[in-house]
Length: 106
Image (cartoon, rainbow, N blue to C red):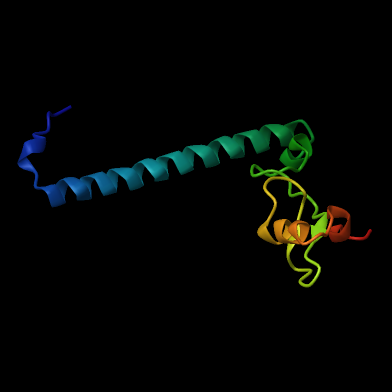
């Protein structure tokens, strides 16, 4: 491989090279990821399964939880009961409401 004299490039040229290399790396990684996915799907098919059957159909980001609580005046605002309490939940609790008051009826 030929040695490159990086000092001969201007700052703009170096940034352009960096930008081009970053895009090439991302493209390479995406191709490899797609090849791996295709290989796993093909192997699963050989065994008589779909990939979603073997993984339980869960996506990489996780399974969304069902909301358990909603805002009394704006039912579009919901909370699953996991993680931090939204400000509307904190406000309701501070105003004497309980979580049971906010619970979505089944």
